[in-house]
Amino acid sequence: DSLSRPELYWAARRRPPLAPGMEDVLKGPEVQSLVRGVLHSEEVFLFNEQHIVKPPGSDCAADASRSSFPVHRDADRVREALGPQPALPEYASLWVALDAMDRRNGCLMLPAAGRDGPPAGGGAEGAPWEAFLAQPGDAVLLSSQAAHWSGPNSTSGFRRAYMAQFSTAPIVAAGRLVSFAVPM
Image 1 (tube, rainbow, N blue to C red):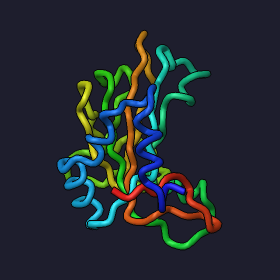
Image 2 (image 1 turned 90 degrees about the horizontal axis):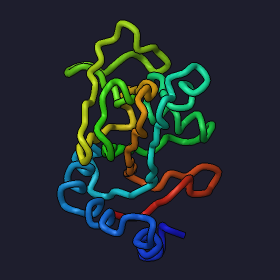
Image 3 (image 1 turned 90 degrees about the vertical axis):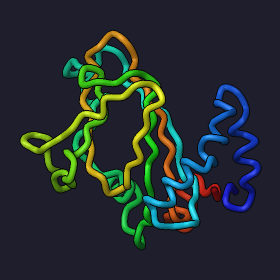
C-alpha cells in the first residue's frame, strides 16, 4: 500500500510513459512550500494525479457536457463520490497547463480577485469570473474549497492540463484509501 511503501509508488511513477522528472517537481521545495502554505500543514500527502484533456471541437451540444465543467468545488465532488463519512481532510490541487489556454479552448475560470465565487451548485451567469489565460507550464494552486469552472473546447486542437492533488491526511472511505497516500 502506498502509505507504508512510498518508494514503490515513485518507482512505478518513474517508468515510461510517465514523466520521470515529475517526482522532482512535486517533491521540490517550491511546490512543497506552496502546498504546505495553502494547506497550513507540514504533513502533506500526494493523493491523486491526473491529466485533464478536452478534445477538439467539443463545443457541440453532444460533446460539451463531456468537456465542460460547471461551477463546482472539488471538495463537494469528492464528498458526493464518497458518500456519508467523517470530515474530509483539507486538500489542494496543483493545476498545470500543458497547452496554451484561453476561453476558446476551455480555460479554467476562477472567481474575480477578492471573491469566493457563487455557492456550490450556483451557475456562472452574473458572477465575477476571471479566465486563467495560461501558457504551457503556467500553474495555479487551488484549495479544495475554491469555486471554479471551465467551458468546452471549440478549437481544432486538444487542451491538456496536468493536476496533482495533495491532502493533509490520507483520504479514506469505508476503511480503505480512496486513491494514493504518498507522504511528501
